[in-house]
Each structure stands twice: as structure tokens, then as C-alpha cells.
Length: 36
Image 1 (cartoon, helix red, strand yellow):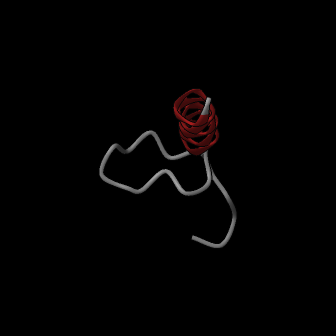
Image 2 (cartoon, one colour; image 1 turned 45 degrees about the vertical axis):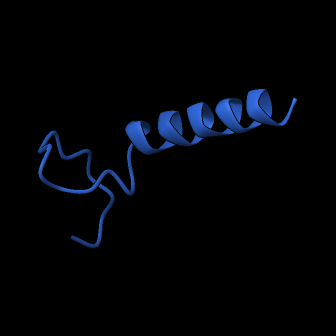
């Protein structure tokens, strides 16, 4: 639990994985597009 190991479990929240980063990037892009 302490070490940030890539868990392929879809049940666990992707708070420390590439999915989170991708989601954040996508959200930022959406916000920028909406703001423009």
C-alpha cells in the first residue's frame, strides 16, 4: 500500500497511475476548450 505499485485493478482508484495523469490532462484540455 505504501509503495506506488501499478495496480491493474479497475476497482482501485487510479490516484497514483498513468490513468490519473491522462485524466487530468484531458480535463485540462476540456477546460481550456470550454474557456476559449
